[in-house]
Image 1 (tube, helix red, strand yellow):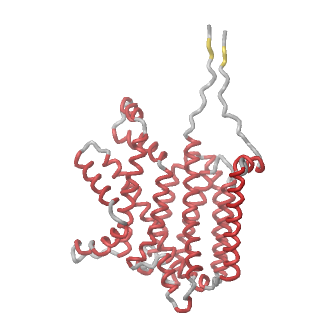
Image 2 (image 1 turned 180 degrees about the vertical axis):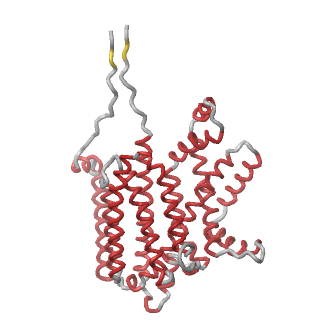
Image 3 (image 1 turned 90 degrees about the vertical axis):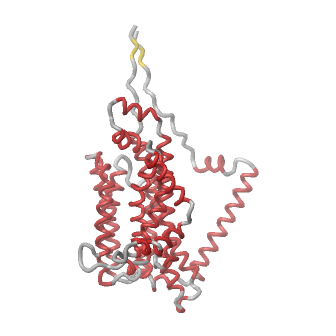
Length: 416
């Protein structure tokens, strides 16, 4: 007698309409109904107040009059093409990543349409603020390039599924080349760090700090779990000391104390010292996030790899660390978002990043009293950048979860 076990299948999805969902979640009782109505009225009042203020009372002329300063600061006008070229490299990497990560799904799903709508709204605002037709044409061309490369990346991901493993290298190459172009390390005369400002300086400092703090944080996490007492003690001391200090203290120390301990013939750039401070601060917090992921990996994984004859380096790099990083993607991205927002503290030590250039503009007598408009625009930029990082991490997390789902075993047969 042969008995075939029916294949397991996922439970059916519980799909309900909008009216049924609202009745279940918003109007399920008298108290919930009252709370929903009151909350809705308050929300409508807030939105209408903001819209009335934005379209009738606000004076937005301060934004287009200083748009270039907000974007690139005092970057030389005749070298703006370097910034556009670097942005093009980032768009290439973003388009390919978008397509490869969405190779098994629709390119424009519901979340993708929301992101595209927000991006289109941001682009409309940017185009409205740009008075240069060349800049408008370049912006539209970069948007078309992003969507086109997304479709190309989707096809490449279907043909070569392992191409996704090379995306970090693609981003690293695009970032290094783009940064070298902006600073003038490859073509033309170099640009000083003090000439960078606005959103450009914010993105550069945040990107460099994120890229450098990631491997540094992993090494600190491994060092704190090391069997060598000296390495474990030094890693623990570093993490606890840095976590016990405010970021502004570390930034001041990197600006004023580092030159005192260096020899007189060594002079580092102020921007490099600021990036070092941000990297040191973020690496300590990132190390604890990674250490939490390492503790979440079952010990049986490492013991099984040792039983197969793998050395500790291969065990950590190929077995333990990928599972640990996958488990802490949300916390790591949260740390990166926090680091991106912490770059606003650079204005305290004399840098004109996005918030600093905004304060400089507001100090101009011509734009006195336009604080709300300026800070609203700056806050919108921060929100768009942070939301884009959040969406990218969620898509990456879903992709890793779907790729790591175990396959269902074939039907078993029982013979008498």
